[in-house]
Image (cartoon, rainbow, N blue to C red; front, side):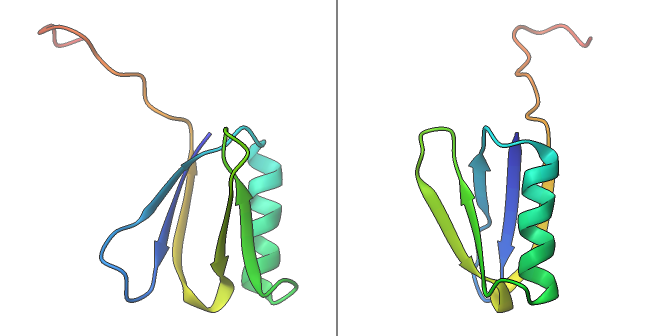
Length: 75
């Protein structure tokens, strides 16, 4: 699962490949945004934890990673 996180006053977004389910990621983001948690904590595929203060979140995109296309075809 690919997660893109925009952080206020940062020029680049964070991109995390997570093994967590969509529901688990959405629950963590909802808890951070509603004030139940002061920090958004996500774990990537290698087991590293990424912590973002909830008051600095600009946006969060959750989606499947796109498969890379190979070759010159336009399929």
